Length: 127
Image 1 (cartoon, rainbow, N blue to C red):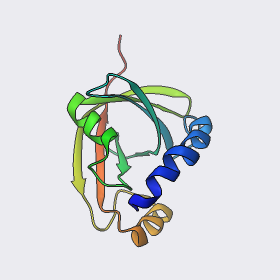
Image 2 (image 1 turned 60 degrees about the vertical axis):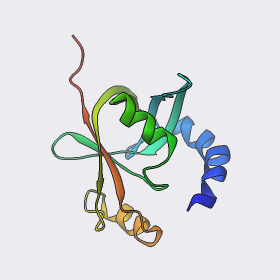
Image 3 (image 1 turned 180 degrees about the horizontal axis):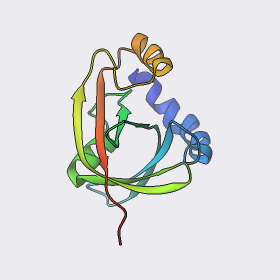
């Protein structure tokens, strides 16, 4: 899968960034670089769980920079379905059965052997 990352970053992400903040099962993570301080807007599949947490499949694994940035900061924001939410308490976990994913996504992730995920809690609205 690592061979796809440059293609995704250069071609797929700019296109999906246009709509990811409004579609179900998608979001745009807004992450601050831990070294550069630069803001990154990363289109992601985002899956809200019954307990109110959000789960993200780590298609390229947990060693990618955006994951390290979120873990270091302990939070990020996400635009999803037209609203902005603050996500906190990032937690990496392994789930070989991909049980936190909807069935169509599970079927897609299986052949890719994706087993790493990131879970975050939605912070209550300020005010």
